[in-house]
Structures are given as structure tokens and as C-alpha cells.
Image 1: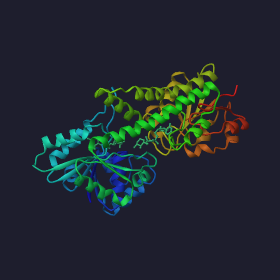
Image 2: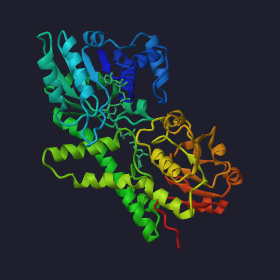
Image 3: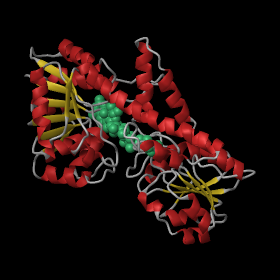
Image 4: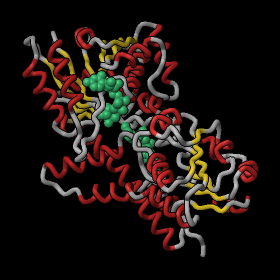
Length: 433
Ligand code: UDX
Ligand code: UDX
């Protein structure tokens, strides 16, 4: 099929690359000239395992191209995916201006029947809005349809998630239109949910908000465990083995960050209120998450009389492992507070240091975890990259000034760390006193 993907960010670029890899002809369009120029040279705008190889290979074979020219993207395609960013406004509402501007562009260039697909995460009713914009502004009297086909990929495993999604959701105005999308996705052999446009739009937000709820729920239990002298890791295991609950997304700790959960929960809450509903549950989920960094900071502040001049080794900066994304990363909140209290930060992250450097140019960036721990008064584990799981702790012990570990993601075992001679503080683990 001939496909156009507008917006080559995390979602658009991965979607375009995978469609091309499946044999389609894909034109990726973006307004960012530098990004397009780089992609044409094989330079990726993001770090995502396997992406570069897939892009370079499909570009070389002529199935994938990059341009700033929306006209050619629209004219040469049967299906146009909108994958631009949908950032939050200050009140939590989703800013749809980029989606609207792409819809205006499509209206300008559309010259025969096209299917326009909203892949961006957009509030219920956006399909109607896109339809209205194109209908009102189209220059040629041609027909078109608007479909909602939300993306569920996770950063760090985006290619795998796109090739093997748990389900593909297609919200279409008619069976015939749904069939076109079905045809495109059939090769993946995954379960498909065919529904109306509004329901598909809500499925995406409801799924992300539900996962955020699971995380805040276990974090609420985590705080209880600390107060009641229990171990949240054991509680999560005990809960997760109930098939009705499931063990995934019950990892306690610093809470959720990233470009999706924070903005999608607040956008859904905003939509609920806008239509006259009650957003209490979502408000509580967000409020619990907003306090996660202060949970670890409280422990740190309790440990030291003053943080002035104290040195903290910070392991992990990205909002989660296997990505260089720092949007809403907990590391930033923690650095901010430590610096305000005149502490020194020695940070290491395998992928995200360049991005954090732009915000905090004056902290010390290290070559590896060991260098970060040199002379440190405490180590803070913020992002659970695999390479931090099996550190040589004898070496760490010899490098640190005082052997104290604050584990924001509970990746180490209390018993092992204490056995090695560390003072260890996890999240949601009672002290046993
Ligand atoms: C996506 C979106 O689909 C969002 O709705 C979802 O919640 C998260 O994933 P993401 O891929 O993370 O957003 O966005 P980003 O990495 O910022 O990339 C968006 C791209 O769209 C940028 O390259 C930007 O230059 C481009 N863009 C934006 C356009 O091409 N045209 C515009 O009018 C606006
Ligand atoms: C999420 C959704 O999973 C994906 O379906 C959607 O398309 C985009 O948003 P992503 O933000 O890439 O994906 O990462 P995810 O792996 O879901 O993690 C989100 C955040 O939750 C991270 O900060 C992670 O550290 C945190 N998290 C996750 C927990 O704190 N505990 C958990 O048990 C799981």
C-alpha cells in the first residue's frame, strides 16, 4: 500500500519504518527540516533499539523516504497517518494545534479519496474535528474518511510492540473503511478490535490511565508497607499472581514518567470533567504519582543533617530503561531538589546524559556507574537499566565515601545489600525495627 506518515517522532518514525519493513511504500513527512535532513543521512532523532537498522535498510531498498513536502506525501498515498505530538496545556487539556494544522495541510492537498488515520493520542471527538477541518477547507471536491487507530507502543521496545501488539484497535466510520486498515495490519496476525471512532479514541486513554492507576495503587500500598513494616515487593508478588490482577505494572518505586502516562491521565481527567463526569479517581492517581520523588527525598534528608556539599551518585536519568527520553523523568525532580539543597550530583545514564546536560550543564556526568560512585556519600538508583542490576558491589563499596544506597526502583535485594555492608533503603520496605 502507499502510506504517508505525518510527524516523525517516537510514534510516527517507528510506525513508518515498520510499515515499510512489511513491504509498503512509505513517505514520512515532518516540518522539522533538520530532522528530515538527518534521517536522509541515516541519523536517527531518537534512540530506539533496532530502529536505525530498519530505517537505513528500508530507505536503501526504496520503500521508505523522508520529506518536508506534505503535498507529495498526501498525493502519493492512499492512507495518511497523523502521528504528530499532542502536548498538554497547563490545565491538562490536550493541545490539538499540531493535529489541526496537519488536517489543514491535508485539506489543501487532497486530490482524490484518502483514508486519514489519527495515530496520535487524541481526546474523544478529535476524529470529528479532523473530519470537519478537512471537509470545510478541502480545495477539491473529493471524498475521504477519518479513522482512529491508536498506538500502544512503549519506548525502548517500540519496534517489537509495533510488530507484535497485544491488539490493534481500529475505530472506523464503516465496515468498508475498517477493512482497508484490516488489510494493512492482517500480515501481523494479531487480534483486532474493530469499533466506532469515539470508542477507539477512549480505549487509548482508558488503557494508559488504567496502567497509571495500577502503578499509583501499588505505590500507595508501598507507603503503607513502609509504615506497617511490610515488604511491598512481596505484596506485589502476592497480588500479581491473581490472574484477575496480573503482575505487570505493579512495580513500586518512583512512579511513572515519560511522554504518555502523565499527560494522558490529566487529559482524560480534563475530558471527564468537560463532559460533566467525576474525575476523582484519576485526580488521586496523579496526586500519588506527583509525590513519589519526595518519598525518596524524605529518606535522603532524614539520613543527612544537611545536604550541603554531600555527593550523590545518580544511576539512571531516563524516565525508564532503554530510552534516552527524559520527558517527565523523575531524575529531573530529584536533581532539582538536591541542587537547591546545595548537594553535588555525579550522574550516569547509558543514553540520556546529553539531554539532561542541556538542562543541568553543571552537574558531573560520568563515563560509567563506577565513576559516578567515586567519593559519593550515597548512591541513588533512579532508572533500572539492566547494567545497574549486577554491579560489582565490592568495587562500589571501595569507591564510595559512605556506603548508602537509596534504591528508587527496588532492583536490589535488601538482604544482599546489607550482607555486602551497605546501608540500604528501598521503596516500600519496612526497616524491620
Ligand atoms: C506521539 C504522539 O502521537 C502523541 O499523541 C502520543 O501521545 C505520544 O506519541 P511523539 O511521537 O512522542 O508523539 O512526538 P514527537 O517525538 O514530539 O514527534 C512529533 C513530530 O511531529 C516532530 O518531529 C514534529 O516536528 C512533527 N510535527 C509537529 C509535524 O511534522 N508537523 C506539525 O505540525 C507538528
Ligand atoms: C506507555 C504505554 O505503556 C504504551 O502502551 C503507550 O503507547 C505509551 O505510554 P511508555 O511511556 O513508553 O509507554 O512506558 P511504560 O513502559 O509504560 O512506562 C511508563 C512509566 O511507568 C515509566 O516511568 C516506568 O518507570 C513506570 N512504571 C511502569 C512503573 O513505575 N511501574 C511499573 O510497574 C511499570
